[in-house]
Length: 77
Length: 214
Image (tube, rainbow over all chains, first blue to last red):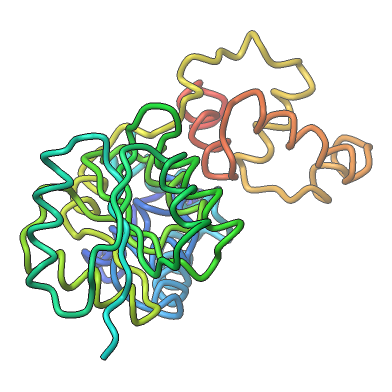
């Protein structure tokens, strides 16, 4: 059986944190890392770390994958 | 410490009076002028030294977005805090891309007002936490592309849009379609213009909403 990780929800141990969900939502709306840092009052480096963790957890390797995942999790519609 | 010279820009006198009154108790700033539209604000900045502008968005003659763009172009050292009630993605993204330094709701309390001014004067950015939360809770995307339909795209553009949404790079798309990556880039640029989006996320949202990919 093949599993399409690109559209699978994260497994239990890989659940997104609240902050990761926020970064994912804003990324899917098209905000840059710099803009997200501004909006969440965190450093740009922290946003980059959250994005890296999001890519790992959602098995995405680019923004397109993250946007698809945000739809999958119903964070945007 | 020398007080920072501050200009208030809003087309409602009551708002100008209210902010002016509030700022009398903020040590860091002094109000050196008021303007009721963006054009007048520019005229003032061209004639007297201003450190900080508190700028409304919706104003006659010249709105706050255009004024912000012009001020930042000619006077990049002037700090600008946008004061508004807008919490739509499209407006916020525009404000950020113009180089504004802060975004504050008009109904913010004094503490948040002071915090915003202090951070911006220190060279940091300030964004109202209330607006961030409102934006995070808005599920619908900002895309003005809702009015654009697939019928307005060529077959080739749809084919390329689908591949972009699948996460393929220009080179990968070019290799698959036997065209150069530059041609793919031109299609990508045309897609963004037609769909009125300015990034990959916008293209992917359109593709998903229109059923091009799951």
